[in-house]
Image (tube, rainbow, N blue to C red; front, side, top):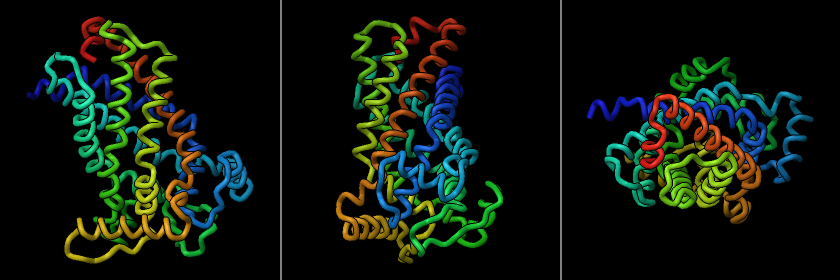
Length: 312
């Protein structure tokens, strides 16, 4: 069991996924900035992504779309390393060289997502605060923050809000493990269909297209929860104080969804979807392309090419 947990194969997948995701996010980071502003700032008028970015640059300066890049990249690198490692380790342990199925990919993806959420949510809470710090909001109810960096943000949040605040948004995040699980299920399923049993590498175009399709499906299905996750991580919501944390989380999530729908209609739950789809689909497509190329090149150097592709 120890050899399975600490394997070079899982490590190669984890490093390839982390490097691919960091590179892709850096390229498309301004699109994520536009998405986050639309999700959190309810009074900001919904416009096209280029128009939102133009407003941000006009109001806050040329570098504003890249505000918070470093903490986001740190969080993303850790998060995708954990997810890719857990996904491929559990999949290899479960299948024992047998062919995978969509249901297996979905279950393994959900379990890997739960582990990832519990370990990395504090990083995402901090990076959401830092990314939005100094922004010019159209909602006067939002309180300004003053963090000097990642460590200072951790210290201030723990001191002022308690350790539990580092896991703000954990409940919707746990529900949102369906997002990467659906993404990987669709991606792995399309990959098997393209290969049709043959042990070959995907072309760059194939990896890019099926990565984009998989992420688009997962994003559309789970977007309202992603919006509530961003709002909770930002820490501007007063949560109920019931004894049951689960009940409190459910009531907070339900209240946010209902309030957003009442104020802005059902479309309010999907505010920023265009920016999110543009950012997340392009980022995921590039990430999977880089992941496949880095992993396949590494496995080829290790002499695992032909037999390994069949198991994947």
